Image (cartoon, rainbow, N blue to C red; front, side):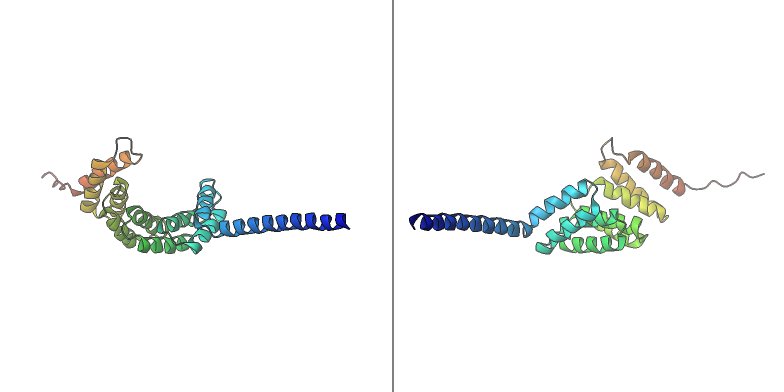
Length: 198
């Protein structure tokens, strides 16, 4: 009788321990699924590995738990890689609204509107906002200058390209293109000489 009672006590202790471990595992898994930082880290890793579809799902999970404009901008980049340009633009507009003073987000929005949607007016507005912010990178002026050049707005394009070149490092990958484009803006402004009289 004592051994049977002892057996049930030991069995109860083990069962309690197993239930406790199961509850701890469940709580940890539940907590992990509600941790936006965990989803964000996972999304960034997937994005870096080129697994854009999975990255999108992880970004969405993180954003469902906590809105973050920078993370939303990353979601937009992953969507762009999947060819979902309209949705990527909507996400980037939301990111810009959530971080109105974030030059990089406005720069990305300009690039997406220009190259993804061929919305040159919207792109120029986004580039202008980015360029007006403290700490804007010289690439903003370069991209804005190239856009203005494509719109035949030579004076403005030249000013943007000059600004970009004055602030860019010597090894900027776009420096040569900016220098060539600046020459084009200057040549287009040069007065045309009249033909020589006969």
